[in-house]
Structures are given as structure tokens and as C-alpha cells.
Image (cartoon, rainbow, N blue to C red; front, side, top):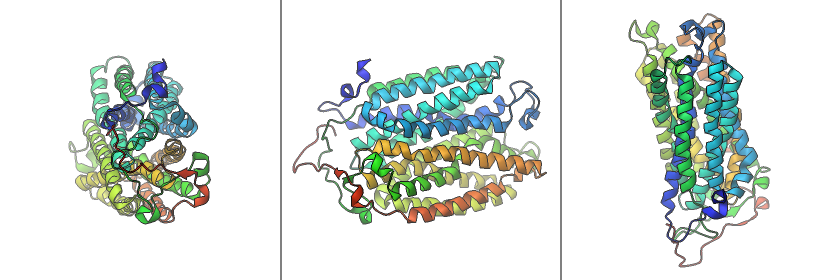
Amino acid sequence: MGFLDREHSVAGPGWSRWLVPPAALAVHLSIGQIYAYSVFNKPLSRLISGDVKAETGAPGDWSLLQVGLIFSVALFFLGASSALFGKWVEREGPRKTMFTSALLFCGGFLIAALGVSQHQLWLVLLGNGVIGGIGLGLGYISPVSTLIKWFPDRPGLATGMAIMGFGGGALIGSPLGTALMARFAGDGTLGVGSTFLIMGAVYFLFMLFGALMVRVPAEGWVPAGFVPKVNAAGGMISNHNVLVDQAFRTPQFWLLFAVLFLNVTAGIGVLGQASVMIQEMFSDKVLGAGNGVTAAAAAGFVGLLSIFNMGGRFFWSTTSDRLGRKPTYMIFFALGTVLYFLIPLFGTSANLILFVIGFCIIISMYGGGFATVPAYLRDLFGTANVGAIHGRLLLAWSAAAIVGPSLVNGFRDSQIKAGIPAAQAYSTVMYIMAGLLVIGFVTNLLIRPVASRYWASPQPTPPAGQQAAND
């Protein structure tokens, strides 16, 4: 297994850095399946009775609130494992990390399939939530850290290329999961168990391809003609490195932690319940008999959100190379606040088109926030430990993965219990999300360049006339 070691994955002369993005995409498109997990929510809540009443917690069935925990637990462990193993990822390199991610993420599907067949929720939580979530974390940060090292001249473009794959995972996972469940509906688990087994095998092959293809640049490598920008973007782009333990002590780290937490909280709860939410807000009772959003149409909505999640990651991160990271986040928070205030109005007026457009824009900025934050870290802290710093910052994602879905699911349940129709049960939480984005706007405004006392050493500047072979 020595081929997994970092020293065996160093790129040789003439190897093109443009082969790294396909390797990163192979991993991120696979683990991005977690964004399509909501297509399993209703089938999982009906495994015993098969009745729509199971949605409100029929005896023997899992409630939507219980099933929704799987998504939250997975993303919690994504952030926790990224923080815990960040230094290990930097030390061992992307190939070993991506291979380990494949074993954990895809092995989690096998355990979850067993849990479904035995109707043991704790096994599904262990498989897709805990073990799969650790695989998510390792698979998420390693390609990003590697791409930043390969593309110091275009960090926003680099992170966008990788992270757009994670956002686009639902584009594959949603229709694939729906089709497989329909194909194996008679397997005794409404097709969920068989779907988990097949998806685990297919995703493992894709992730293995990424692990075998990826390379790291040789020590001291820089792109041809690259000259680091000094004090660019009003001093927000530094040419100094800050090591991970020092970065953890800076106010900039914690301000950015809050920025990511607030941006993610405002979007992740919607993604986790997107399929159920649109069906309830635009049911037959709202749009008229036969006109309500069906399960198939809701799966299409999840896929559409995936397109904007994916496209937003590339568009906004690339745009941030021109606008700067801080102004880009200002746009996220300001525009997002306005849209969250308008969403309840779109729902009560039964305007499905504006509702879909509004959430597509929101989710594009949600995805854009993920893709832009590694470049933000690189600007503030340099490239030396950016993977490890990014891993620790993703604890904000872990916290948001609990808070966001809990807000949406908890307020939905409490509103319905209070007698409010399901179509109107989401209004309060939308206003709360808008308030969180206002706080995020102020927090981002406070971020300043890192003080010199935290610097470790200047980033290397290429000698005059140096040419790179790996461009």
C-alpha cells in the first residue's frame, strides 16, 4: 500500500496541474450525494406501514424529525473529522486521505443498508451519519487543500472547481436514488436497502479513480510567471504564512468561523428538507386538486437546487478573485436577507415560480460561501497550513448542520401542532434565517488583515525568470 504515501504522489516534470480538478471532482461529486439525502426521508419514514400517516409518526415508523437527524449527524461529523484530522491530511497527502475517505463513506452505505433491513435507526445513523460523515470530512478538505497549492495564482477558481462538485452531488444522487428505489421497490425496504448497496459500490469506484489520479506539486513549485500579490485587496491578501495553531488564536479565524456558521445555517436546513418543504408549501390544498407538487417534481426541485449549488460555487468563488472575498460575502448576506424575507410571501401567494427562483439564488450563495472560504483563508493565513486551518474552520459547518435543520424541522413541527397548516409552517423560520444573515453581514464587516505577530514566514517568491514545468 506504499503507493498511497505522499512521497509516491509527487508530480514529476511535465505533469499538468489541470489533471487535479478531475480527480477532485470524482471525490466531491460522490460525497456530495449527502445533499440528495432528503429523497430518502419519506421512504425511510414509511418502512413499516407504507402509509402516508407515517409522516406524522405512525406506530412502528420513524418520524421525519428522526430521519432528518441522519443528514445533520453526517454533516456534524464532516466538520468534526475535518478539524480533528486536518494535520494528518496535510502530513499524509491527498492520495491516502481520498482512499480512506472512499472506504469510510462507501462503507457507511453498507452499514446503513443493514440498518434499513433490520429497521434499526441507530445503524443507519452510524453508517450514513457517523462513519460516512467522517469519510465526508476527509474527502472534502483534501482535494481543496491540494488545489490551492496547485493554483496559487487563482485560488478562487481552484476551490470553485473542487467544491462545485460537492454541491452538484445531488444532481446525480437525487435522480439516481429515486430511480433505484423505484426499480427495487419490492425488496422489503421500499427499495432503500438495495439503493444504499448499489450507491456504495458505484461511488467507491469513482472515488478510487480520484485517489489514484491526484498528485501534489514538488517542493518549491510555482506556476510559470507567477508573482505573489503583496497587500492586494486593501491588505486582505497576505504574502505571509500563519501556522494552524497560531491561526486558531487569531480574531480573524473566529470571525470567519461565525461568518461560515451563519451562512451555512441559513441554507442547510432548507437543503435537508427541500423535497418535503416544497410538497407541503405547494400541495393540492394550496394549488388545487391535481396541481400540487408531486414527489417526482420535488426530486426535480432538489436537483435544480443542486445545479445552482454547484454553479454558485464556481461562479461566486471565481468572481471573488476579482471582487475580493470580503465584498463577495457582503453580497451573500445582503441579498440573502432580502430573499428570506420574501420567501413566505411567495408561499402565501402560491407563486411557485418566484419561490423556486428565490431559493435557487439563495442556494447559489450558500454554495458560493463554501467555495470562497478556502480562498479567504488562503488570503488571510497563507498556503502553508491552509488545509488544516480549513479543517478546523469546518467545525462551523458541524454546528450549523445541527442548528439549521433543527430550526426548520423543529419550527415546522411546533407550528403544525399549534394548528397552523403545513403550507404556512415555514414562515417563522424564514424570518429567523434573515436575521442570522444580518448578523453575518456585520461579522464579515469586522474582518481585518492578520497582525504580524502571528506570521510564521513569508511565502516563497519565485526567482526571476523561473519557469514551471507543471502548468
